[in-house]
Image 1 (tube, helix red, strand yellow):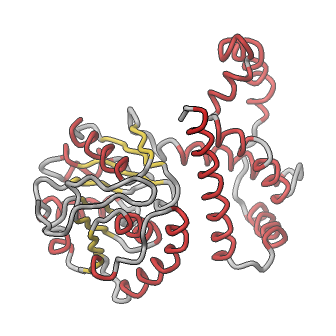
Image 2 (cartoon, helix red, strand yellow):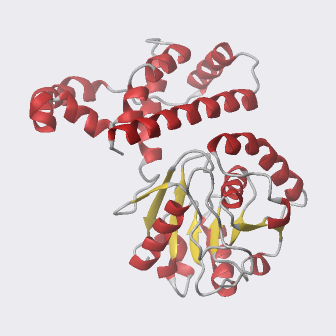
Amino acid sequence: MSSTSEPATATATGSTAPDTYRRAAIIGGGVIGVSWAALFLARGIDVVISDPRPDIEDLVRAGLDGIAPTLARLGPPTGDRAGRLTFEADLATAVADVDVVQENGPERLELKQQIWRTVEQAAPAHALLATSTSSIPATAVARVLRQPERLVVGHPFNPPHLVPLVEIVPGERTSAETVERARAFYAGLGKKPQVLHKEIPGFVANRLQSALFREAVHLVAEGVVTEQELDDVVTASIGLRWAVAGPFRTFHLGGGPGGLPHFLEHLGRTMETSMWPTLGSPALDGATVALLVEQAREAFGDTAVEELAAARDRAQIALMAALAGAAEASGTR
């Protein structure tokens, strides 16, 4: 291996980083990069962050301090990171001795291609190469690479240190070996990786989120409910239900003994003919944005975003722990 650090050890949650991944380069020290760094460090991986901003070290360390309480509640150790976190503005130098590269640069194709040209030339041949892009397909980024089979999308659901999902999206020339290595790597971090079978803009989770938000904006703009009332509807119904069983399993159960076939035949057709045509297509014009902003002030008041996020994370952790306990007790996943 390229690193001389000690092997990763099991955390309190029972997950370890695969032993072949001892050192990671994180490109971009923004919100996603800091979150990845917190998770990697907690799983025993040395981290080098490459970001040209002159104040990046202060920003990252402050971000890690903010994340530490959440990680502590999740189980992984958070104290031993000072000696395992370094910073290197020069990209080629940063990736020269790593086992995995997780890129989180701006959503600009030309910039990502420039980054990955440098990474491919400088990173070791064994390094796993993953981009956290949420909209640019691996196929487009890899067009400038000599070995496009090495690059894969590893798209987290924000924040990566907390939410389990990572969408793994191969490009047209990504090798099956790279996909499997990515799946094993993220699973070893305690994540729940999901390999997509084809590239599609926005991938899966963001498309579902966008579809629900579009209808949410429509309902608020039409005066059917306020933002707070809509949030209450979601968290008291489908939010709870989908945390236990996704849409297809939910409707399979909704079909009774006949399952999903019965649901589609008797209720699905009604949904298609009477509800789908009425779904909204709102525009984020000036009036709509003003309404949403005004209601957000009413709903969230003067509470700082950081305080709201901390409360959300505490509730998210409690929910995840309850779901894990329920799954273990029932022998399901």
